[in-house]
Amino acid sequence: MKAIYLDYNATTPVAPEVSELISRVFLENFGNPSSSHAPGREAKRLLEEARGNVASMINAQPDEVFFTSGGSESNNWAIKGVAHALREKGNHIIASAIEHPAVVNPLRFLESAGYEITWLPVDGFGLIVPDDLRKAIRAKTILVTVMHANNEVGTIEPIREIGRIAGEHGVLFHTDAAQSAGKVAIDVKDAGADLLTIAGHKLYAPKGVGALYVKKGVRIEPLIHGASQETGMRAGTENVAYDAGLGLVCSLAKDRLASGSEKKMSSLRDSLHHGLNGIFHEGIVLNGHPEKRLPNTLNVSFKGFNGAEVLGRLPAILASTGAACHSGRTEPSAILLKMGILPEVALGAVRFSAGVFTTEDEIDKTIEIFRESFSR
Image (cartoon, rainbow, N blue to C red; front, side, top):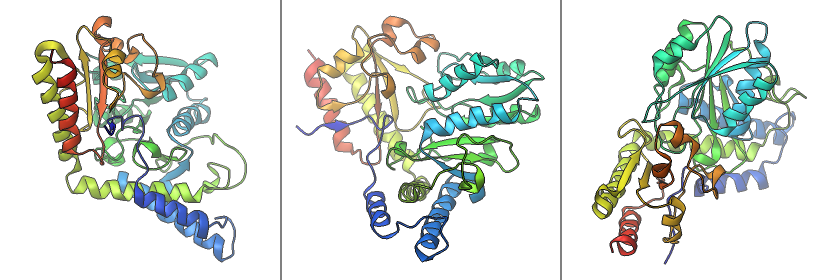
């Protein structure tokens, strides 16, 4: 039986159109964008076209978008860049307690260098309480960093309200949108975001490319120093092929969202949830918010089971027992524990995440596989 891939939150396959574009750029447009001759000018054109496509997806200006090697670099740059640029103003940063390691570990690094970090708790759905943010802001607070959507349970944070509160206090707001970009509409102006992270491999571009949105006028120290690429903000000859691929997937994502892709994704997700409920009845628990979550993400705990054991009985279903970067561990997800979920329930968690190539037939087959294995 062909395996059914339901782990799109871990990574996505490269879209065929993107693979074709990247191959063409590798073969035909190898020029250095900093060169003044024809191949260099063509490479520069491709680069700026891609920048415009990324900006368009999030309602930003092209000169506010900077290409990076991926989500981890973008998060590190946003956090460390603001910390260094605003050190004279203060040394206090606020983050949610359920951030991705690409945010947590840069903050831990800064903590060891004398910065103070406040970790905002979340409720049972994985949501922060905006009033907690308001109370946590101090005179020396320089940055608030809260993810747009959680990678494990899919809960979407109230970033518009977070951005408004941060703005009212003159504090910069960064959001890690690695999981949400391309799955739900993002408007940096509406969200009040000063910095926003995009990871290419989460939305059908290759691994190794991403972007950081930096609102015009925001002070941020470069993470990589060198020559004048990316207007002096990120040194190093640009990866034109991958950057062009990221621009294309952002354009495709914008078109998909305009045509109602969120509704299709949520329909597949809910069909799977309904089917599992029909098999396990009261034996499964939904993790995350029932409504305020990514349309493609279903995280459920199977009572009395270990999530790894559940998937071990179903080799044809490719899903995850937690974040991909924690795969293989047997302890409960730290994210679920911070949401107040009991360890024995958290241990049974499995995350299913659909994508643009997921079909209704695959969801039906997944339910049937579960039924054959667990109905007895």
